[in-house]
Image 1 (cartoon, one colour):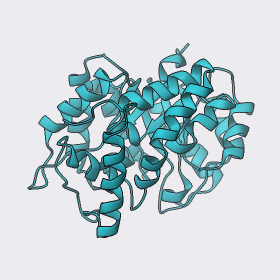
Image 2 (cartoon, rainbow, N blue to C red; image 1 turned 45 degrees about the vertical axis):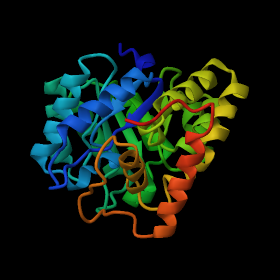
Image 3 (cartoon, rainbow, N blue to C red; image 1 turned 135 degrees about the horizontal axis):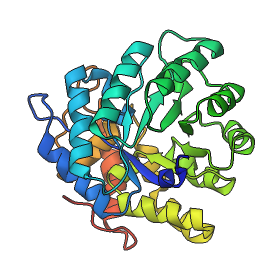
Image 4 (cartoon, rainbow, N blue to C red; image 1 turned 60 degrees about the horizontal axis):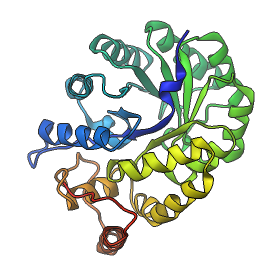
Length: 306
């Protein structure tokens, strides 16, 4: 029996730091890992969307996951992003993650090839059957072109004992509530969007895979902790402080704004892998900096400079 309670709370969707020459910056990655753990996050998610996984080579992908697992050294769970639109590739990545000690894998909907619900079921089941560690399905229609319908997810949860959670990034609260209401009590439903994570917790969800926690791990951890404890008044106070930051994180494609913000405060370089690139709009940059300056001056906000 899998203890799913360790997958409650805030799980940071880690950026992948690069050097100016576009190589992995392992020193910056280690610094970010310590920053997250020291500020109370529940776990780390390397090689997800925010980690620019589509442009990592297979070798780099493996290295980032292994380094994160080894450097974290059991301090918090590591959920490795190992999804792909190729089932065989996702199986290889997932087996590697299990081999190096990841606590779970995060499996995004197959993208571009737009499988049917039957194809989605067979895809996720094949990956889950190939490993022994917990699997978390990642439903994000906006990036993949397909929605994992709730009946398909329920069938997967019933037939695959190690599919124990879903990261719901559909943005559809009705669908998310339907998942909560129709899965087993110990099945974990995590928000893929910071701005609706408390709404999800309010009707039975258990946390968030967060972009904002890259820069504000303590605030996000406190917000979710209050929410999960039922103290929504305190949770909403923190949400209000971060509301504008949640918005500017998506002024342009994630992870461009969050990585730009991290670079602004010395956590990593403002370096991306093409086709992602620096912010294309000076107006967006000024808006991002303006929101960050307001947070610098807010007494509720802990220091977030490197």
